[in-house]
Length: 101
Image (cartoon, rainbow, N blue to C red):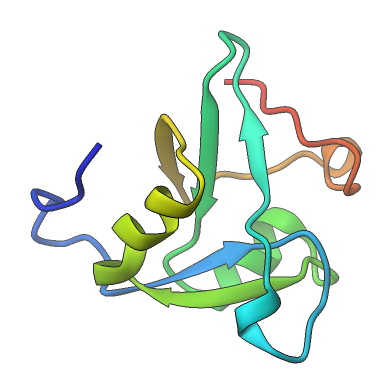
């Protein structure tokens, strides 16, 4: 997967849910989800208020310029990226990483 041909209006900076709160972004671990058909999904948010509205105020996160999305993929591959997806409250706990798509 390459991210060279993202839509022109794709946000230049993304907010990505991570597994736990950290003080050093280098230690942030992205939170991946599994779709109903078994694919690995990365949820990204175009604004911090959208991340909070969709994942809850307590969701740990880190910021990433969209140009570095490939680097994240190279570290741990994912099959699909979903932008600004609402996560139901019952799936927000760290152990509940499934996705209903």
